[in-house]
Length: 314
Ligand code: GDP
Ligand code: ZN
Image (cartoon, rainbow, N blue to C red; front, side, top):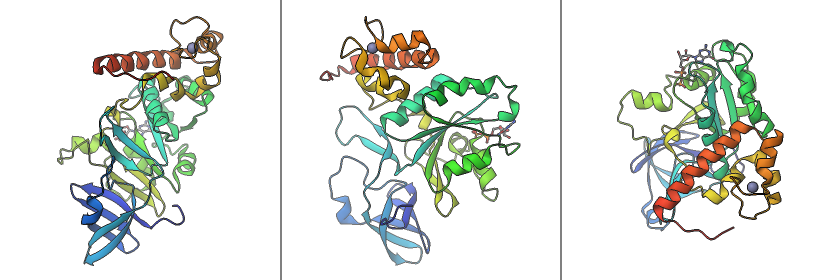
């Protein structure tokens, strides 16, 4: 993936054991004791980490060092210490998968995923699957996302439409697929690796193999350099770590207006002279996206009140 990084990749974690993909195959590893003693505010080792390993026995190794992370998708509890739980390290992008129908797309859920990605500085792509079921109108629902600057890829795992474009988006990267159950995430992955017995996300939970949605993530290898993170529970991530005062920045199409409101700390609700609301009224900002902003903002402000959380003003 990146030059200068050790080639070994953590692809699964089970408690104190990690499966590490090395050029010689997968090693079941523990973490070197002296590493464990370093106090950190984040998980020491996580799926997606690049690591140095020492082989100690057939199929067994010790993680000696962890390369610095470019970024991580994580759970963060506001205000707490040692609060970051890394779900996937070094994630290149979040691919939000929705279907044009069966199930009907939930745009508020899509907006929530995109906010999580923006807040954690993870590039996001939208995949609109089951395009074969579209009468032409449903795909238009995703136009506001294109206008907001997101790449929107239309696919059909059934007919193969758009799979080349989706592949060009995934190739050479570590991507997490997020989306409701039934939209076709497993089918898309299977389309690229028909030989794998794949169950993604919610599906793997449904099989009752004792997985913990909060901790278990694994990487599915599509080719030498291309990985998909199977991250059950992205849907339950919540917006922890996002502060209400920062929510507006998580809507990329709002950003050109943010300096132009009359009040510097404008929340873009009922304040006079709000440039964001003016843009909504003129149609420059999509009304549905703005409604999602309002909904998420209310939720965050409610949580902040409940926690008695006080922040300094921007
Ligand atoms: P997941 O829960 O997101 O992993 O969804 P699955 O991959 O299990 O797919 C759910 C259902 O949708 C299955 O019955 C698939 O055969 C079907 N499906 C997946 N992709 C497509 C598609 O592009 N078009 C249509 N018509 N059906 C699809
Ligand atoms: Zn405003």
